[in-house]
Image 1 (cartoon, chains in turn blue, cyan):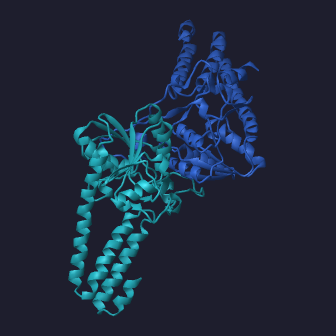
Image 2: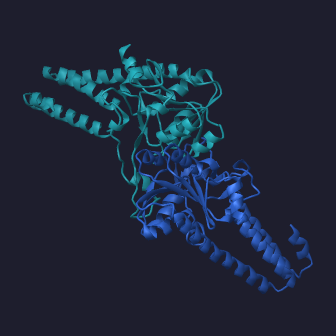
Image 3: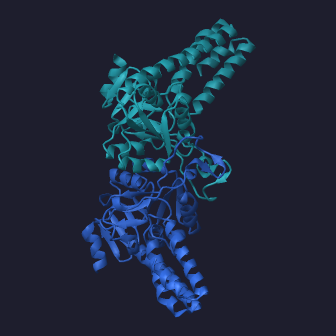
Length: 289
Length: 289
């Protein structure tokens, strides 16, 4: 990377710091090939780093990095709150909402995208939430259920395969999920199982909403087929703590994300407003305003 | 029940035996409100019991019960093999098959319904199986995967919410599941999550097959809405062995079965042949022949 060349001319301490920073960025980027606002944030920090390092004043560099990190964090909270306010208008009083995985305070700067919409709606309306447990890592059972329960929002946990049953019994009025990356055409990459929820919602004519900030929309990714899908370790599926769930020697598939095509998404809720019928045009318009 | 009246006139030993038998029938029946061939088998044993008990010869009663139990067992194996042979014709060479829960040797007399079809197909064709792990009780991960792996049939385990991803990638050519009860109109009650698989198959225009013996078809149950659905204990969802997966105080829903409407079922595979487009007429025809 470009940094290393400049860093070679710097004193040892700065050189070591630059190498450490580069390694940190690399490590962070490697955690999630599918998510895009992670790369956006890393790049923003890289820009500050490259701008401030030539001064040679390492404490100033660290301060600039910290200040921007805090600004991103505060900004994310504001973004989520604006998203929440826009999205809350889509939620009817008394609505029963299905969500998948965790798109809450624990996954963002503190308010959440999908759960931010639910939080905003819950301020003035009665809502009920079904949280898919979200196998294999159980972010719904462990994180979403905890967050909403702490906030005194009515939440029940279901196994992922119970959603269809509730749709059929007309116990779900809408679905809201987050996103790891949204392509320019509105295709949405999100936690594995999201696509199944979207198909079930479509079959039952129930609205399916995605809540995500503009930083999650990647205009350089034309369609969902261009989004890399992370395969996760076998052990996530075969074991739960020390309990073995799958016999030795049996293969597993463990893709961590899936892509929901735009035509199954009724609206994308962003901090700049709600995009109904997401497509190339409506999404580009968001950035033009 | 009618038995008790007759039993009152019998010697003490026979009376105690009759009470024990009645309690056993009751306990067995209470294990599964949704399954119907369980009740069918219990009733067959009751008939033998009521016919032989008046003789007062308890060892003859026990022998008659045991003989019929063994006959039912042998008959079930033959039934499954016939079902397997009929169903195998629906499986193309090289097919990739999705199954849900366990409808195998471990759930029947020893060959399986859905897995019986797969076993029969695998004798002459190359097949590949994806086994949904089937939360919360993991019959797919623990039983189906074990059975097929033992039989050297290519099987991979997936979390239930990964099926949609594989459908979308065109990695599934057909679905085969068992049934706990089939209504007279062809609606199918089976393990929770079956309905979601059927909707995904329908959306992707992939055939969805049900393999079940005639004893699973309940002509007295007109449609799927008349089938009682068993709710199972909370702890099945909230815990895995000693690991707690859901925070204290958060409610869960744990319906153990769902109903797939007949119009999503491409064929029902029975020991008497394959019923395409299951409905009131085509199913009644099965019993008329």
